[in-house]
Image (cartoon, rainbow, N blue to C red):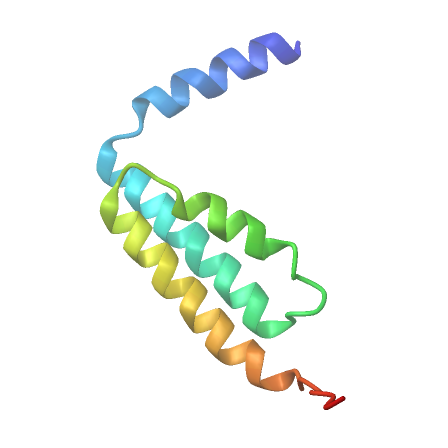
Length: 87
């Protein structure tokens, strides 16, 4: 049953055009970024998924991924305080 499901998924993926694939990756980046900005502490694991999505052969997806990561880091980093100890 699982093999059949995987075969059907493979056929569906082949049917997607390049534009549909681009749109789905773009939407996925937006969803991940939104989830991270909404609750960064609970969704911190999504950063890894965003990085993986940014490692694409399509340069536009790479740019969008990096810009999305930048926006997330720019928003969540100021909330954390760094304490510097002088010895």
